[in-house]
Length: 83
Image 1: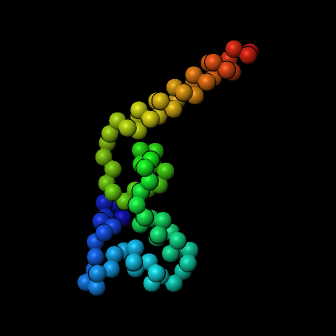
Image 2: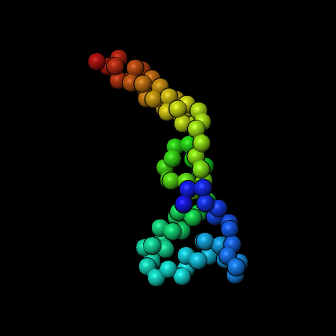
Image 3: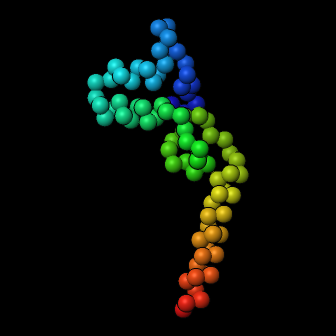
């Protein structure tokens, strides 16, 4: 499903999200709705597998380093001086 267009329509004008109601299993319906909904604003964290093709960027390494440095700063400022 990676790279798939979620807004494509069939001959009757239905999108993939419209066809989810035809599935018998309620659990499968929930999973399909979650997979076909728009992605969140935190795509760089990859909390959910995105449907669009992911390309290499510096966003994820920069976010990781910022988080890592923040945790390390908290350790240095608050935990290590107490020992």
